[in-house]
Amino acid sequence: MTFDVAQLVEQGWPFVGAAVGAYGTAVLTRTADEGATATVSLGQRVLQRLWRREESRPYLQRAVQGVADDPEDTEAQAGLRAEIRRLLREDDELARDLAELLPAPVRPNESYVASGQGAVTARVNHGVISTGGDVTVER
Image 1 (cartoon, one colour):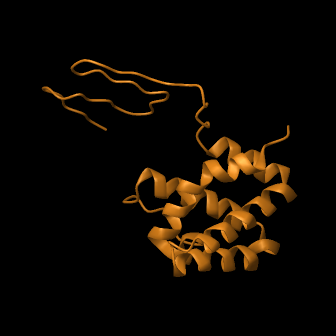
Image 2 (spheres, one colour):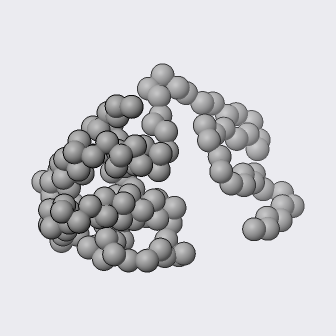
């Protein structure tokens, strides 16, 4: 199966950017953090999956370091995205892994409307949706 690498990078960037912003280069080797948000946690998993390719580690480390040094630097961000694109183009299995890890992309013609008190709309929900009232949520 062929993957649109550019789309995978675009899908993954919000997660990757959040993880690098939260942990810097430590995101590459850090163990899972139960206190991390879902966004940061997914970004960490994406980067650690990329980190498994030992021959690419120096390049990935340098690209992550650039973003960690200045998270607002658009050139550093572009450099990390380019490195991720390169890794995915070179390894179909890695691209497949990331495609399975990332949430499905939003389709451009999809729209959702929720109206009225307590109305909820969601394309995908993997948890509890509570609109208030006398609700007890146990996990």
